[in-house]
Image (cartoon, one colour):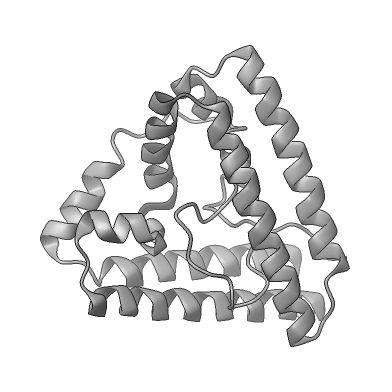
Length: 207
């Protein structure tokens, strides 16, 4: 049975890309899931009314994502369609989640995203612009991202074919994520790497 996979670094427990056609995004993962973490809510001083709205969004997103993943076929076209559908609901859910926050909370959430994703957030067009990446650097990051997504597809396929266990899949996905992040970081100049580091601020306390 197909299950929901991590999209953001293990903390987010959102859905993983189903196919390498998924486009780069400013928020490559579910913000509703990230905003479900107690440590994140504490740092953002989320109110009870905000928490209730975010809980509803998180439940809705998880249900929709699970439905898409579980009903996706095994062909290239069906996986591409599922990936597009997942991308669409993630974008809408993220937009709805941000509307729940105040401008100050949204800005602080972006800092938290940097801490969680690290160099993986280099896929974000706005981050690339902020760091002043050249066209060549952006192209290199995109190639690394696409290769990483292809590896995710391969890992998921091996799991679906019962060639690896769930634990092995999680380990493989984690290793792939770290490899992709390291590759993206290597594209930066020392000055760009320092700027990226400052965007993360101080580490959040454990959940």
